[in-house]
Length: 220
Image (cartoon, rainbow, N blue to C red; front, side):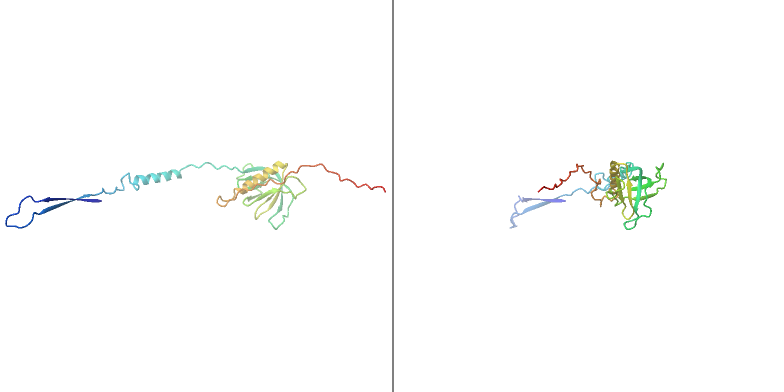
């Protein structure tokens, strides 16, 4: 609210009466003009940020987000096949009592690994031989195992340790890739580290065997 003051002065034109000895007087008139701001807008005014129309629009946008249809779940980590499996250990300190090779159908799906006696028609209803979470699991080539080539070692944290015998070296690499990818997606996004991939041993280039020169006795 602003206030302005306007003042005007005027002199008396009439002569004083003879009997008065007063000097001519000056009359000052002040006019006060007030400029009052308009009243603030009411809450029902659509222009007001707290109006009911603005609030309803915000609530409607939140409801639209809640009703948003999410895409269907799609598993991008999967591998399955009939392989030979040997259980080496029950845990880190206990050897397995039955360490013979078994022909099992192993499935890596999402964040778990399961084994069946044969290929299941419905994996969701059929009971597996064993099933474990892949959190903190490790996989790599079992280079210290000499009886069979292309053997993958899988170590479950706080659980058993397996050997998976593959038919080819490329098949072993694909199994390691699937198991490591499954273990990498088990961690929470806030605590997940950069994924580590290890595809096992390196193939060395074969070199011809060189014969060492023989020392021939010299005649004296």
